[in-house]
Length: 297
Image (cartoon, rainbow, N blue to C red):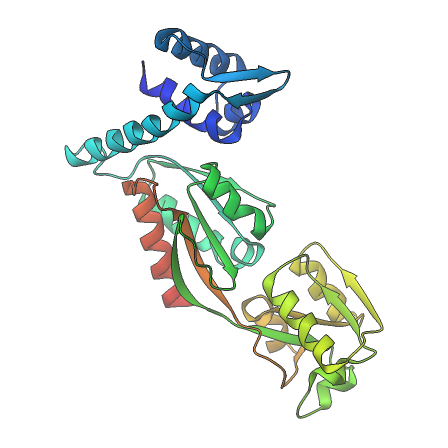
């Protein structure tokens, strides 16, 4: 059996789809199918049951999955131990929440690629935070940078980096911009501009409900930049990460109100699977990301 075949099996055993496996690893689907079939023939037992377009692990496949993870992990450690991978190289699959993608990750990736040119970065965009942790558990991505409430997991390594402060903002013509103190009840009858599901949105809406405030309307928008434009146009109130609205506040296009409600801060965190081998590439990304965020915020 070959390392390439084991890598194909490992990925396929987690995503249970040969087409997705091919996309993740960068092979043709026919190559995935042929290599796994060759591996099954060598082992003398099927590893998957083919049910149309779906595949599921057989009992033998489930047993072999554990050994595959150990073999590939030890292979990586052996290469590092003898110096074969002392310089970070290979493929690193990363994912990040929208705030990180827009306001931090471009700087981090530029520094990383300049410092470690032999590492090929594969970025998975447009994934909701709640789905990213599942991708880590399934082995579809190697590391994630997210802003959310502190996570405790028995399966993931969670590295807390820094607080992610939030701000409630409105346009300069909104009466709330003139108030010295704004309480949740003061948002009664206001129009709210909201992101898709995230921890700070839930905390914000919960504070209004607890205070008995009933917004006039709620408009859910797909991204932070769209929400900012709507706030500046006077369409409503929004809660956004402070890093995303620094320039607009400085230029006077938005006002950060003096919020007297519950704290809406989340945490910037790095995640990777506890059984994931800490390759030189993964360690370099974790170290560089931590250094950048602690230095620049």
